[in-house]
Every structure is written in C-alpha cells, then in structure tokens.
Image (cartoon, helix red, strand yellow):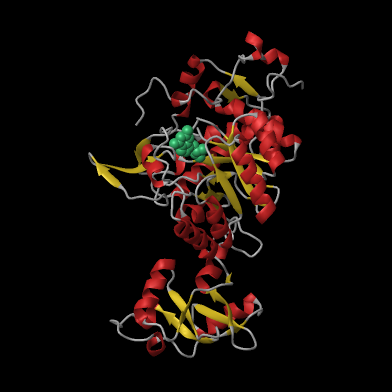
Length: 484
Ligand code: XMP
C-alpha cells in the first residue's frame, strides 16, 4: 500500500479527496458498520478461544482491559479483571504513595507465596499494628525482631479482645507453625491443613523471615483457573504515570511495587515529550510500556520506534470525552483502530482499542478491526468494583463517572489551568463487574461464531465489514416495540 498525505493515516491515493490531500474521503466508527455473517464451523460458542496478548511478553486469557481512570480502576477493579483473565490499569489521579499501595494490593491479593510480607516489630504497640493492618488492607502481620528474625504472628484473633495499651509481644501468637523457605507448596498446604492455620511464615536456616503463605490465596488460585497471572502466580496489573511534575518519582516508586506494565497516560500521545519519556522508561527500567493515546499510523510508528510495547489507540471517542468538540481533533474510532493496527502489525506490536465501546458488538468490531485488546471505561464504571460510592436519586442508584480531563479530575491532577476536555457524569449503578465481563464475553463468543472464528486471530482474518446507513443502524436496534 502506498502511503501519502503527511504519513499520518495509512491511506491509499483513492482515499484522498482533493484539497492537496488535506481531506480524507471517509472515517468510520463502530455504528457505521456491521460484520457480515459467514459460513461457520464453530459448533459451540464455548469452543472459541479468547486468548490474546497485551504485549509480546504479557498474555491475557480475555481481551478486556479496564481504563486507567479515577472512577474506574483501583485495586478492586484490577483484581476483578485479572481474576477473569483480563487486565486493569491503576489510574494516576492519586498520591504516589496511594498508587503504589493500589498496585501492591493487586500483587499481594492472590500471591500464593508472599515474598515481602507485612511485618511489625515485637516491641511495637498494638495500636501501631492495627494502623499498619488497615493501611495495607491485611488481616495479619508477621512479628519480627530488629534482625528480621521470626518472633511470632499477629492476627485479628489475637487482637479480638484487646482494647489497647499493650505491646505486640504481649498479645501475639508466640509459637507459630513455620515452614522452610523453598519448601514445596503442597507440603505447606498439608501443614496448614494439619494444624488448622491460615497463614504460615517461611524462614531460612537462620530463622530470618523470607516469605508467607496463606490458605486464602491457595484457595483463590483454584477458584479462578482463567486468571491472568505473572510468572510468580500473582495477578497482573498495570500502573500509570504522566509526563510532567512528579512523573520520574512516580515511575520509580510505582515500579518498586512490580506492576506488569506502565502506561504513559496522555490524551495526545503523539507528542515529542511522550516519545522521550517512553524511551527514558525503556532505557532506565526496561519495563513493559503502554504508550498512547494516538489515532494515526504515524503516531503508532513513532511510539513503537521509541520502544513502546503496545499502543493505546483512541482520540476523542470515549463516552465522557469532549476533545473533538473542544479541540476539533480526533479520528473516528474504527478507522483509528484499522490504521494503528495495520502499522503496529508491521513491527510485530499489538494495539489496545481505547474508548467508545458501548456494547459487546463494539468489542467484536474493535477486535475484528485489528486490536488485540479493548479498553473500557464506561462499561466498567458504576460497578461495585469501581471507586466511589453509590448515589441515590429519585429512587434510582447511580455512581459517578468522570473524564480524566474533566474539571474535577484536572483538580486532582493539579492541572487546573487546562481547558477541560472531558465531562463529569453519573451512570446507572450496575452491580458486579464480573457480570458485565461475562456479558461482554458472551457477545464476543457469538460474534466470533458468526465470523467463523475459533480464535481472535481468525476473527481478524475472516472479518468482513459492511457499511450501513442510518436506516440500517435503526434496524439494528430493537425497534417498533415497547422494550420492557
Ligand atoms: P469509554 O467510552 O469507555 O472511554 O468511556 C474511556 C476512555 O476515554 C478516554 N478518556 C478521555 N478522553 N477526555 C477525553 O477526551 C477525558 O476527560 C477522558 N477521560 C478518559 C480514555 O482513553 C479512556 O480510556
């Protein structure tokens, strides 16, 4: 294909409609198209594989990512997505310390062997111990001395009848069941079963604390067989940084919590500063970098050249975005995905389709158009796992959903001089995010079956889009009935 017109989009000569190539004939989005049904050998919708990759080094079992937005993804949402096989990215509208904690919460949530368990000194007060447990959201602490040697265990049970004013050493369980660091997990489970204990600290030959194993985590591992885990069995999670202010400090602190990828979170990802920061991250930390947002082949190419491991695609298509009205800029999302995916594929890199996903059908179209994963904000907002409380209004339940460039979010990012490019909104309370995921996957499986696709790669190969009119769109929705 011959690329012309400032190299921004992958366009052929036929796509350009004059005026020195400054106008393109057409750009489409999800509602402009449908997928044409194909003769299909998919016998059952459960026969399809939804496995995909976030980056070349991170595999996912489902192609869904929750958006790094303050009203969408903190640890609860990220844990839910990863348990189901997807991926959540913690937002950056938090203090550095809190973002680090949110990453830790995910990484420790189902960690069969916890390498750096939370500890307390035997000489500390129980008030301090309770504060530490609350801060980290854990139900117990390992008690050590100054030389990091194991002294005991402190759990909720030890504190149940305490009213304060004592030292940890006075109330802890002093003779806990102990395992050896490196001992087989099956032996440790047997030790827990025999002694009816939920937590076993693991020590080296000098009784120095090395790790902790908990029954809760062992059981959870069995409960979520499709979960997205790292090589140490921990749930995967991403974290975000910006490109100004504290970004260097934030990157260093957050990476210490060992997220699986860092998202360089910027509305206009095709900025020279973003390119520099992507290179800086790769050079200094060698971490997996999610870069964006871009909506053109040129943007994709430049971020990949800077070292990006995956490209986040979408400018102005999100449900809370007003970039297209405020700045007059953007590319309808289906065309953006096709352009970015085509360019990224030349370099063996994947793209994330970010924004504008309203239905399971849009997920199918985004993946068929070339994305490896789909990022959703709106669809996951308003759930139990999204941050914020439920609001009651006129007998109905809602939660807040804010654009990250809305006035409210910009205050949090200390960027209030900027003209807002997002809105604050209320969305219906939707219950459990797991059910939303399940409905989206049901639609995806169905869409794959219509396109004769057993895998997401086959979906991309087989998909045939057809352009529809407004009448076609109207016909596509329930019509001429009173929906109940
Ligand atoms: P959905 O459609 O899932 O989109 O709600 C979520 C995506 O929208 C982007 N985003 C914004 N874009 N102004 C924008 O122009 C904003 O304030 C804003 N906040 C989020 C972001 O890419 C997100 O994943």
